[in-house]
Image (cartoon, rainbow over all chains, first blue to last red; front, side):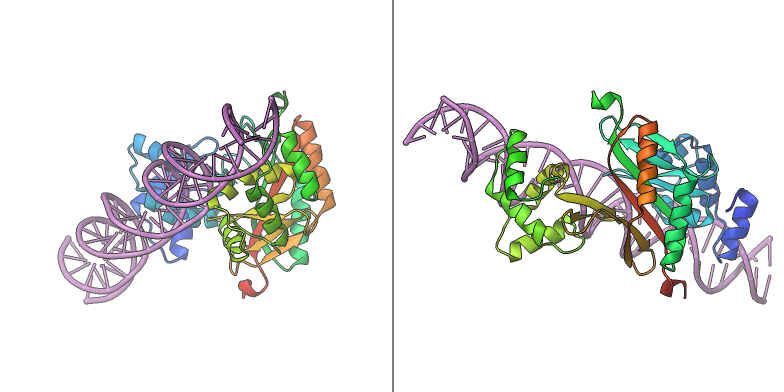
Length: 142
Length: 142
DNA sequence: CTCTTATTAAGACTAAGTCTGAATAAGGAT
DNA sequence: ATCCTTATTCAGACTTAGTCTTAATAAGAG
């Protein structure tokens, strides 16, 4: 899990990739994100802050940042994939109201352990997971 | 959970909707699906079997079939949403290899119970969930 | 059988994500 | 420092899952 610019430099060079200005802008901009973001949100925030980077560059570098553990895939709507800065909080999953789209974050160590057990039983090396509980919140049930 | 044509008729009329030929073709075609399918797969299978229905009709009716519990959302790739006929097997989740895209199905009652507990704690009425464990299978780890 | 209105098909449209090709710049070699 | 190779970037074209529009059709009530 890469935590800062220095570690990122090591990580990126270790892969034989180049440490470009855009990549530094990207990790800077992502650290500034609070909460969930999708690619368009990220690009327009970067732009506002004078850290212009093309949409394509974001798409190209996201897999690297995911691999480095600096960004985590958070959840998906029918339209979009949302991410979040891994440093902002620990890992967690989401409870989503299909009525008002309210999102509640939760952690459950027991579930995580079960997931590891299931992966092991099937000889998988678990890298990450996506767990979304969909339902109706108190208000939306009326 | 709607199980057959008769129950479906009751369900659809209960909603004040019409029992159309297309809807019958749809549930017929879905019952014939084995395993996972996305909208395009479903449309072309229906076509092959002489049950022509437009793509749009499928998209329009999927929420109804989900609500009726005849179809379940199965998992999503970066491109597509996959479904499956709810009757074919019981509910289960997926372990997906990001290398070869192999999919392993699993059930875990303990996780299901935890999910219910989490929903209850947050005053949500849980309708369904999406749990995908992503990693590398034995072969793809080399 | 007639009338109302939900539903349908066809195709235009939207937008997330990918691809292409030319220009740029990182980093090693000299 | 300067040159050279090649990964990376940008801009914009492209692909395609999913949505919307409109006119035609047909389900169901009376």
